[in-house]
Structure formats: structure tokens, C-alpha cells
Length: 118
Ligand SMILES: [Zn+2]
Image (cartoon, rainbow, N blue to C red; front, side, top):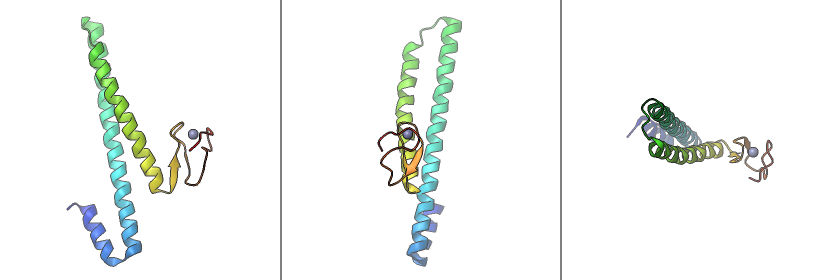
């Protein structure tokens, strides 16, 4: 059991309000950690693309297929990051606009920045 699970267990014994706050802190921390991990993986792929382009330019090797693979991985990670951002917004009682990334009130039907339907 990790530290956050232990804190949650202890908080449950102390009372519902504290338990809810502990669960929120745990979920928020996990979300932040997951998003950071996704961003790190994306940065590794950006570096790999740069290396592949450099390799192609300096040796005339064909790295197009390799680069396309990295781009496909990046697209999947970008979607995962959007999901994490959306999850984080709902944790703090807000919505995330998938069109522009701005956060909006949970009850908002449209994005306050770009007007997209939420
Ligand atoms: Zn928007």
C-alpha cells in the first residue's frame, strides 16, 4: 500500500469529510503524475523525431517510416493527455473545452473562450 492509500485509509476512520478531501487529493495527485508521465513520453518522441530527421539529412537514410511511427504514438499520447486534462477539470468541478483547452464552469453549455458546445 502506498502512502496516499494509507492516508486515505486513515482519513476514512476520521470522518467522511476528511475522507472525501483525502480521496480528492489522491486523485488529483495521481492525475498530475499521470499527465507529467505522458508529457515526458511525448518529449522523448519529439527528441526521437528530431534525431531521425537529423539522421536522414546527414546520411540520406530513409527514416520516414520511423518518423510516422513516432507521430502515431504522439497522436495517441495527445489524446490520453486531453483525457487527463478533462479528468482534472471534473475533479475541481469544471469542464474542459476539447476545442481550445480553456476550462469552464461545470454547468456551462458553451465554452466562454471559443463558444464551442460543451
Ligand atoms: Zn473553447
